[in-house]
Image 1: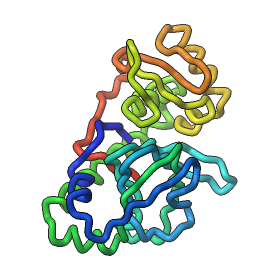
Image 2: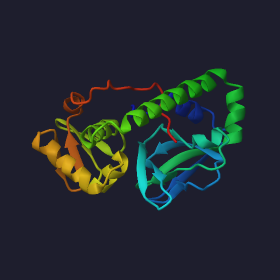
Image 3: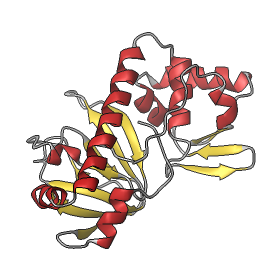
Image 4: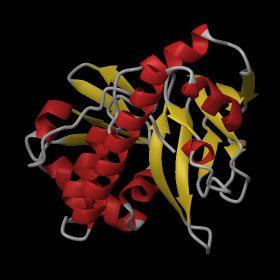
Length: 229
């Protein structure tokens, strides 16, 4: 999913209308929810970093997104899907606003413009996910890695540095995001380093997003609202 700058209309509305919401603190690594948990609540990140994972039957994980302040997740609850089907964990200490999905549905019924923003944003997310999946089999690891680095350039795992951004992710975590073996990611990073497109050090990758964007034939897409999960 595409990253955007923090704050959006949904999160702003939630902060201004506190009825029914509770503030929940998460510490490093505990899950906000697990794949088999009943999908009853909707979440908005208030501070910190939440990562979403797809979890295979044998336990392997694929990193889906990295969420910061203003990002929403737990959309399965709004769709009346019985379980979340994904894993949401805090990296470091995080805080989220949480509301039962049935209460949020009541709020949306009386706020048509907000409901429309939800629909439009989810339609964009669905289109982007479908587009990403449809091209997945045809793209080599190098291009998929470039797109992953671009996708996370504004995430809480990245910070601005002279000449670009520094992404705090291990090779194993990047492999989870790209959907390949760790060894494959290491080889791709070595290739990009030889091309002077990235610099690597322990648990981090530095790069200039503008330079990487030149190697991605697909134009960058930035939705108006940030949602996930």
